[in-house]
Amino acid sequence: MIPYGKHFLDEADIAAVTDVLRGSFLTQGPKIADFEAAIASYVGARFAVAVSSGTAGLHLACLAAGVGAGDIVATSPITFVASANCALYVGARPVFADIDPVTLNLSAESLKEIGQQESKIKAVIPVHYAGLPCDMAAIHSVSEKWGAVIIEDAAHALGATYPGGGKVGNCECSLMTVFSFHPVKAIAAGEGGLITTNDVALYKRLLRLRSHGINKSDDPMLNPKAAQENGELNLWYYEMQELGFNYRITDIQSALALSQLGKLDKFISRRRDIVLSYDRALTGIAAIKPAQSDGRNRSAHHLYPVRIDFALIGMKRSQFMIRLRERGIGTQVHYIPVYLHPYYSSLGYQPGSCPAAEAYYNEALSLPLYFNLTDREQEEVVGVLEEILQ
Ligand SMILES: *Cc1c(COP(=O)(O)O)cnc(C)c1O
Image (tube, rainbow, N blue to C red; front, side, top):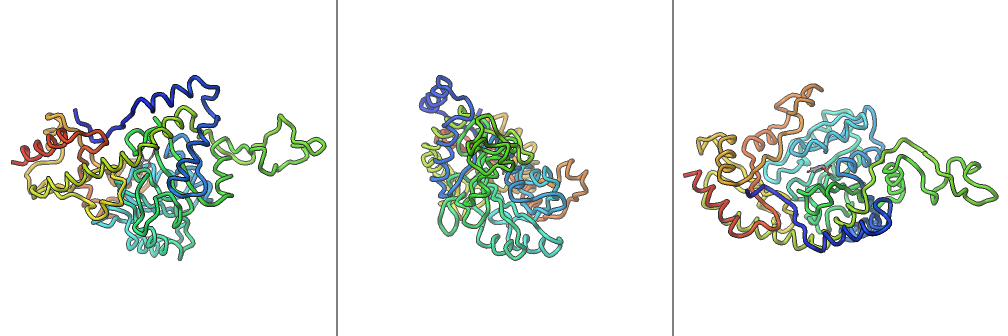
């Protein structure tokens, strides 16, 4: 079976993990800071805070940005549910701005329109869909007028480059950027996430929120009298200063992700080769249109989404996917527009609000794309597509 995506591990990754298992720290040890420093330096941000998942990262980013009850958060409907759920976690209301039909990313134009309809947008969460960076300069110039903060959902985009240069996660146009290390993403930690920022106060707050809201001894204590005896910090003392969570990542996960990070550029370059050869092979198939074909040199190539005219081929997507699966080929649809999910319907969200997203959803299919997909396997995928379409 050729899946639509999968991780790749080598012996060095396994050795990195067993080293941690033989050492003294399974969690709260030095591998976490090593991993954070490596990512911060890779993307060009001052600070990085690793957490238990991308979802936890989005939740903490919303909290640290001061998003709360009654606030409005704008995001893209073509994303995984976590990009919007993080607003719900903090009592805010997500609103969905339509995608650009070409880039499939949150469109700055529709963001502007949403801003005119809503009273005040507190935060914008652009998603670099399939690894293609959003036009952050345009999104920033729209958001800035409302004083809205930007939290980038870069779960697909570790290693991608912005239109103006610079790596996704450098936070030049945003307050924070969130990554995921779920095995289907660019590098695997098992589960894991990370937030980058250039703001030292946010960095310290994120560290606290990740661990129950408990202050580390190098930050000012709120109750210095209890904290010290004769000017010396009491060894047993700590303070819970706000309500946080246990969103810590382990040293085991961090060691794996750090080892994987060393292969990231190689991963992306192989993924890009696969993407370019799909582009060439599919030009002969009228019913299948590759998406996001501008920006091949900037994308992290998390997914290879195509648009298929199912009416033209006279077959439903469900049938088409079954036919592919019968031939050992896995595909997936990324994504069902978030507001169409039953939970969002129960909150009052209606179909029809983002026509470009819904049009894309009706035609979307992600073809197999991962580092060790072989040329032969890819030829097999293309061959089977041609056969089914004949
Ligand atoms: C995977 C993903 C997340 C959530 O990351 P987890 O690590 O699985 O919690 C958030 N947003 C997008 C766009 C994703 O693809």
